[in-house]
Image 1 (cartoon, helix red, strand yellow):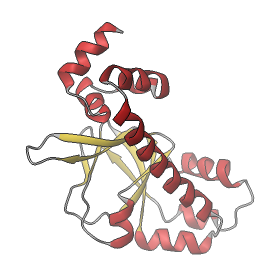
Image 2 (image 1 turned 60 degrees about the horizontal axis):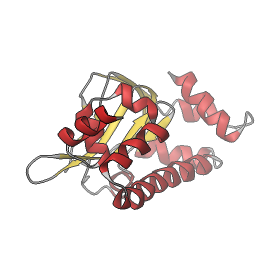
Image 3 (image 1 turned 180 degrees about the vertical axis):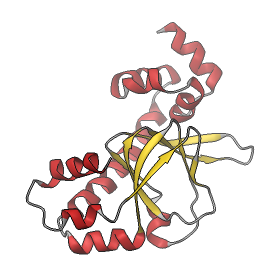
Length: 189
């Protein structure tokens, strides 16, 4: 697993990274089961996760416990509640492993050491923040103006692997539509 993270960092920062092995030593390997919660709403987020294998769901629940999926994180990407992680305030989100996953987790102290030991890691951190922000803003702005059918077409065009990998219920939550509507419209495509 650590080799996957090493390659991820090298791909983004180049091969000449001092202290890379020290940084990698700060990560802890975690293997999850399907549907295992990594973070529950109300807890302080203590880790930033790198997904080596598997899939994570970032979601919230309304007063009737209906899930609203903010993001789905696949391999070679990062996942955390960055607001809670950075502020030590309770999280307003949940993070769950949608399928058995292999993760590398770094805690706040390790993350701070990493930022100090490898100043160029700041570039990756900015990429994490920018990707998270861009994805959220894009989905919000796009989905406001798209019909349910157009949202499904967007998913098929932009994240086609999700269509075969995830349940209709989870996909409907990600797209912000009713699961029955999702199933009915999907069958028409």
